[in-house]
Image 1 (cartoon, rainbow, N blue to C red):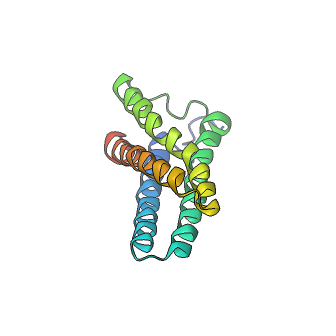
Image 2: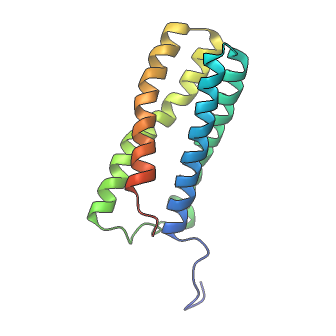
Length: 139
């Protein structure tokens, strides 16, 4: 890096981008639930596939940014912000792990398992949304 040059991507940029992504995929999740409520299971599955791909891309993209591009990306975080990030990850990582399992159980028609995972995912996603959008600072 050139001395005095500003980095192209900063921690606040990444946090703001992730907040926008969480809001966008939550809208997709809402659309999938509307499709389900209307009995359109095929559309529900297709929207959930898009939701899963976009969510996993965001998680893997963040990991790539933090592990490869700039390991010090969030070094500016104080103790309180690090704690907020930790709590956010306690919701977001398990929900991301559940996504492929939920998708497969839905495709295979394993209704009981799919519904049980859906309730668990719902709780985790609410935690992901609240902690990601409202707790993490992007300034």
